[in-house]
Length: 390
Image (cartoon, rainbow, N blue to C red):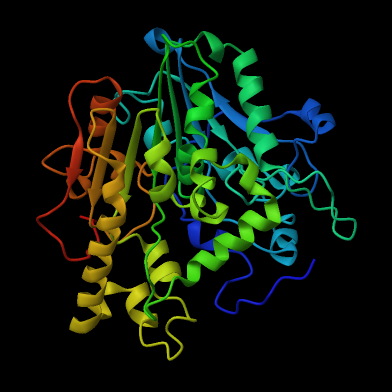
């Protein structure tokens, strides 16, 4: 398979999404779904799907939180093949210690007051397409399998058989590429449950915006074009969306979320570091490297660069407006220079620097899920990009 070269793209964007968590709290060991292999539901290298499960207790026994792990995407045969040597392309390389059950996954009430006693599951990510791929043919030269959608279905089917189908409350969540997946799969996931079951979706750092880069073009769109084509993702994207525009645009939340009927909560920053570095200021859009230092450390940005970042913030918010302000929609949008918040304990709850109107993210998401109020919060005070660390 021949793919045109894109020099600005790293061989794998996965490294950009990985941040070390200082906590050392692992959940249960990894469960491999060996039986899914016969159905073709496999990771990039053909190994079985995997998940981690931490059982609920007390009043949370009938509630389930299914969290989709992030880890970027792969856009070419070479890029995807490189992932088969790490945990993002093969369950053979996964360890339970790879993922820490902190933040939204914590089992401590004081740290995660609304979901601490739920059955908590991490859907391990090993397909590189936000669980949308489904190509029957296996590349004979590399043995690559593009079967992300089948992996998603296999893990969900396993959880349903283990009691999730009897749940009272269910939250499908995800961060980064997993946050995108929680939006793309939201309605299909909801349809698996009885209508009396409360089912909602939560996306953290998954609202990747279709906005212009420094050159005034939409170069990142070409990256999504390659992902959707390589993985055969179009058949698993929202059909209402794909009937109106090319499939790769339906990989962007702003174009698909108007068709999502299930309640959705968006946790996002307007200065998402991944988007600043890989959508706004790519090497291709900034050939002279004038933005290189600024996009890595906002403390060294010039006044002109800060203004450009503020312009980016407004462009992001314009793309965000389509989420809508209906009662089923919730959001918590700050201006922190970061990527991903729900998996990190200090961001999720405990550090006032990450709060809006004195409300922690954990409290905001819980209030929205349990219909304790309308939660639609955007930071309009401290609009400059900043590090939200105290």
